[in-house]
Each structure stands twice: as C-alpha cells, then as structure tokens.
Amino acid sequence: MDHETADLSMPQAPEEELGLSAAALAALAEFALDNGILAEADADSSIRQQVQSHFEALEPEKEELFTFEYGHVRLTMEGWRRDLGQTLSSTGLTVWSGAEDLAAYLWRHRAVLFPEKSQKVVVELGAGLGLPGILCGAIMALASDSGTVICTDGDDNSLEKLRRNVEINGELLGAVQTEVLRLRWGQDLRVLDEALERLHGEDGRAVDLIIAADVIYQVRLSTCPTQLLDAPARCLHEGYGG
Image 1: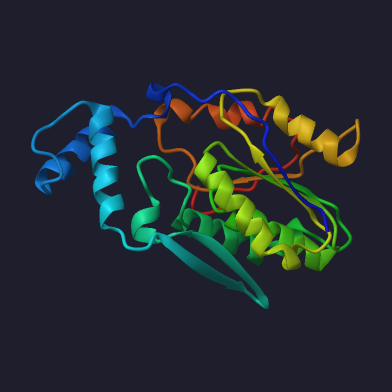
Image 2 (image 1 turned 135 degrees about the vertical axis):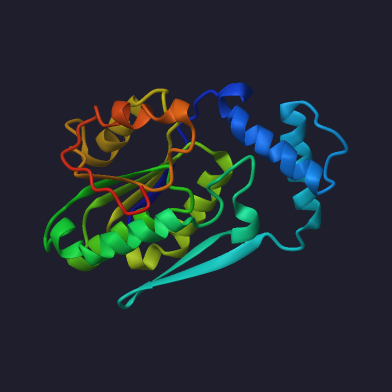
C-alpha cells in the first residue's frame, strides 16, 4: 500500500484574492444584519470574521462522518456537518451535492473509465474531502489493484481532512498510489509534474482523467481550469455537478 501526502508549500494568496465577490459580501452583510449578527454594516473582512465567529460559537459539534455506498464499496468521509461545513474561510470541509453527483457518475461508468488491468492516473482538483477522487482509487483497486490518484486542494483545513479521509479508506485503496497535494490555482502548475515524476520516475506519466466538482464559484477563477488542462492530460469527464 502506497498512500502518501505531499506538502509542497506555496505562498498564501493575499487576503483580497481569497475574499468573496462584492455581490456575495453584500448578501452576507444583509444576512448578518437581518439575523442580528452585526449591528451595522462594517468592513468586508470584519463581516466575514464576525459571521464565522458567531456560528462557531453556536456549534456544539462540528465533526460528522459521512457514509457513501456504491455497490459493495462503502466509503467514509470525515468532515464538518453539512449545515456548518460550507464556511466562509473554507468551502471544502463538507460534502457538496456536486461531489455526490460526480461520484455517482464515476461509479456508473466505471467499466468504461477504469477497465480491468488498466493503470490510470487520476487528478482531482479542489478535492475538499475527496469523495470522487477516493472513489476512483477504490474502483481502480477493484479493477486492477493499481493506478494513481492525486487529490489536490489549496486550503490547509481541507488538506488536513483530505489526508485523514485517505487514511480512513486506506484498506479500500489497496495498492493504488494515492497522494494528497497542495495546489493553488493560478500558481505553480509544475507541482503536478513533480508529483508524477516522484511516483513514476523521471519520465513521469500522462494524466488520464481530471475530475472536479463545485470548484468554480467566482468569476476570476473561471480561466484557471484551462491553464491546468495545459498539463499532459488525455481525457476530461464532467460530473453532473459541474
């Protein structure tokens, strides 16, 4: 079994690059005022911090174990409760409907995507808790007990949960190489090539399948997937969740 994590540190993006859009902030401010969280509209960052602090103070227990069954494959994901996990600082701490749709799509078409004896290389972008990517690993373990899954995210909290979920489901992944990788969109894309070289030697391996669900919610990020697809990739399948 070869399940590794890589912490290829990159500089944190400036606060303004990680912030919400003007429309989202306006909606957030309205919500905060209507619910008595803020006495009056304040600076954008203050609104985010105060709303998040308000809900963090209310929540008695953040953690939840999610269970997903695909045939006889039973995956367990550790994350935050659905009503709390979609936080202002990180959207990857719970399971979104798009990830569930994509996972269902991958399972339904597994015979085509992961034929027996194949050794596929799969990359998941904005993996969050990693449901689709880890399911790919479990499918490949059943089909050929070989292959590679690289689950990527740019958020520290999400990466921590992602590593934990790879560990929880390690038995289902068998001999499939599974790596958790920090990847911030719009920054150094060589990290994928370096990971492939580390796993498969200097010649590396081409990426067979790139998957992503619920990853684009700001206009400024809409061109990043195109940049990522410039990496050696032969196939992209979209789940119903986008």
